Structure formats: C-alpha cells, structure tokens
Image (cartoon, rainbow, N blue to C red; front, side, top):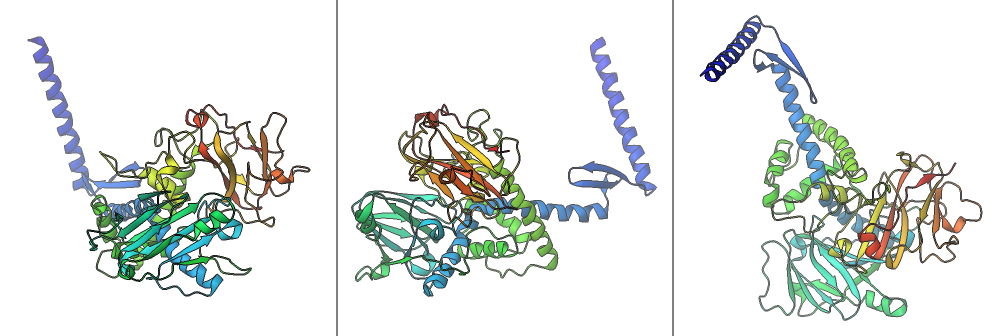
Length: 502
C-alpha cells in the first residue's frame, strides 16, 4: 500500500514538474523571448516549443546539404563508369585520331605506364582489354569468347559483376533493361539491370600465344549477327603533350551533370527510390532537364566538397566498426582496399553502402576473383594510406616499406604507388610507379625479405627498389597478391607500417 502511495506521489510530482516547465516556456514565448540549443548542426533557436523562422530556413538548407552529401557517397561507384565512358572515347580520339561514335563496339588495348594511367588504381604489370558500351544505343551485344585462358568480368553501371569470364569458350548475349532477344540464342543470356555495361578481360599467358588470344574475342551488335563486322581493337598510345581524360570523379558541377545523365538514361532501381526523392529536391528528376537554381548550385557544390572528403575518410581511414574484416592484422598500417565488399552488393537483408562508397572512391571495376577466399586463386589488395606515425605520406619525404620473406602469393606480388588527388599511378621522371617480384634485378636481403623505397631521391645502391615521388603531392600504396595463399587469409603473414627514412 505504501509503495503504491509513494509511486502516486512521485508521478504527481513529475507531472507537476512537466506542467510547470511547460508554463514557464509558454510565458517566455508569450513575451517573445527565445531560447537556443547547441547541436552538431549548429545553434537552433526556439520561441516556446516552436523553432524560429530563421532556424527553419537554416535547417532547410542543412537538410539539402546533408542529403546531397550522402548522394555523393551513394553515386561514387556509378560515377566511375559515367566518367570513364566519355574518357575512353576522348582519349582514343586524341591519341589515334579516331572519332568513335557512342553506338560503336570496340575494345581498347591499354598497356604499361602510359597506357593504363587514365584508370583509377590501375595495375601496370598486367595489360587491360576494355570495352564499355551503352546498350540503349547499340541494342543487345554478342561477345564471342574463344578457347583459351581469358579471364575477366561484365559489370553493370554500378560496378556490380553480372557475369564472370572464366576461361570458358562460348557466346554471351548482353541484354539491357526491357530489351528483346531471341529465346533460342545459342549461348548465355546476360541480363543487365542497366544499359551501360563494361566488359573487360586479360589474356593470361606469355608471348605470341597470349598476344594472339588477346584479340581473338569478337563483339558485335545482335542486329549484325547474320554478318558480324570485324571486331575493332584499338591500342591506346598517348603522345607527349596529349590531353588525357581521366575516370576520376570530377569535383565541380560536372559531377552532378553526370549523375543527371545516369538518371535520365537508366531505369530506377527499387533500392534507390528515396535517393531519387533527394535528387528531385536538388533539381535532378527523371524526364526533366537539369537546370539547377543558383541556390541549388551552392548546395550541390558545398555537398560535393564535403562528400568527397567523407568518401576519402570512408576509403582511406577504415574502422573496424564500419568494416569489421578490413584492417589487416592488429596494427599493420594496411587495409583491405576492397573494404570487405561483396561485389553482389545486394545482401539478403540490406544493400551494401559503405563498402561500395569506399571502393568506388579509389578504384574501378569489381569481380568475384578480386574477393576470392580460395587459397591460390584470384587476387588480394592491401592499401596503406598513412605512414607509421599516422601522417600522410608526402612526396617530398623518403619512406621504406619492409616486405617479409615469402609473401603469400602463388603467382607474384607487386607494390604500386598512387597519387591521392586522382588515385592514379604516380607520374614521375623515371616513368615507373611499381616494383614487384617480377622486377628484374630486385635486391633482396639475406633472409629473402625486400625493402622498397619511396621518395624524391633514390637510396644509393638501391635504385632498382625505388619508386620516385613528387614534392607537394601526397600518395598511397597498394600491395597486390596474385593467387593469395593461406598466410594472407589467416593474417599470419607479417605486414609492417611504412616508415619515414630520416
């Protein structure tokens, strides 16, 4: 009985307190007085329980800024291909004098230091054969794969693999949303949920056999299947002074113009409907021209500035909370560049967002082989973005990376240096950006370990183990393992932080 009475008194007291508090606030509001609250978004002012008109206007702007900022991270992987497509056309026109139409089908051949430069975090040691098509312009495309060791992937516009090319001969039919195709097609139907698709491959092996195999693939429009034209293979060979278009995401209004291009061309994915609502408030709406007001332009640029920085924070500063499996070892300074991403993106109960934004900020294309967990198969990518002191690695300073004996790679390993601004292989006077186990004359220590050096000046006697960096330019490093082995997967192979050389 006493307990019930005590509870009643306590509740009555609480209600009296609430009533008194409300009365006090109401009197303050009647008097025209304001109160304020400091929040992460800034100071919020109230008259009574009502936000002021000034605060409402401030919060409306914050809403648009926050949503536009998240749209930057949302768009990150799609932006790679939106930027890459016109870059491919522009570069081949500049270097080869070819004015390729957007409904033409061709493969670009990209080799070596100059050839792979336009692509984010490209690998210099392996040649690329790349085609990127807009199925809304070409209609369905037939890709005829010959017998031989051809490995690659077909990605949709979000860098999601929709088919793995695994050394098996046969025909593929790439079909865009809503497009008709013959049900009795003699091959495999690859239904894409976007019109823009990238299909690229590597012809493994060496010498003339690999060279011949590289241009043995055929690709043509389904409408030309009765009499297929000869497939075009165009080698990208930039000349000194050529203007080079990059696939790095732009940092001005071109970013949003490309987002609009995607929105107008592609069907709306169910997972993106809320994002499209946000885009609508910012002037990007399907079926309507993109003509942002001056106010919207301000918001879009402000959000892009912050969104790119946030994307770099997600990508270059992974946390175990956001990416539980991505930090290699306890304190190695290396992170899984793939961010623990499943290239399928759409999981049973959610679609990956952080992983997609992280990888999309720094790299182009994904495939199942890049995240293989089978020892001796596929590849692995470890990134180091800061030195042992937690500082950005600056091109005007000298650094050393120690690689322990017997790196867990069944095939070979390589270390590549990239500039942070564009995430491209570093450009330098020595014209090299990587060192690998295949580097002729690479100097090893007595125990089989290797010391690699990065900086503006080569260490005396160790020039072969050195990659030149540029003053005033920050950089990061990838370690690639081709055919990663068990010590990588169980993280028993010791990786150490990159250290400054005093």
